[in-house]
Each structure stands twice: as structure tokens, then as C-alpha cells.
Length: 88
Image 1 (cartoon, rainbow, N blue to C red):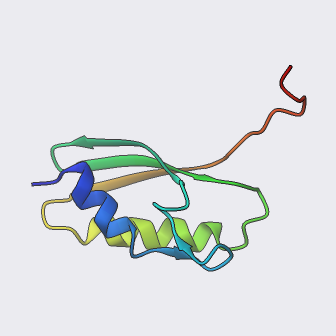
Image 2 (image 1 turned 90 degrees about the vertical axis):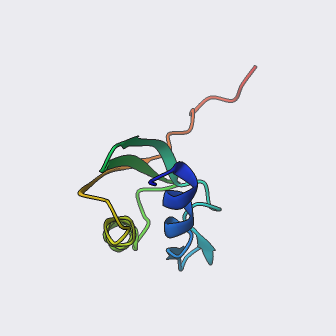
């Protein structure tokens, strides 16, 4: 069965070379949704400057698409937005 753990395990094989950490440990995976055989999630990067962003998205798509029972994978790339003002 396609469970969040199965999807996360597949995504731990994808490593961001800038951080030398997998994309799950790095906190990129957000909003994982599983609807039978359709998987959707956001990969939230720390910066626009991630030179590997497109590659990581495609690697993640391939890792999840290779799982038995997956028919489609929808990934939304995003950038973590930090507030410009310090909290009071």
C-alpha cells in the first residue's frame, strides 16, 4: 500500500548536494497527499538559489513514480519565505 512512510522512504534516497542531506531530513517535503495511486506534495527549498532544485524535483518524481501502484506524481516546487522583520 502507498503510505506516507513508503513515500518518505523513497524520497530519502534523494540527496541535496549543497546540504549533503536527503530531502526528507532537510525538511523539503511538505503537504504530502496520497489519493489511491496519485501522489502530490510540495518540495520547499530554503532559497531561490538552489542550483540543484530542478534536478531534485525530477529525481523525487522518478523515485516516487517507480513505486508499485503509483500512476501519477504531482510536485510543487516552492521557496521557504522568511519574514523580513524580526519577531517582537
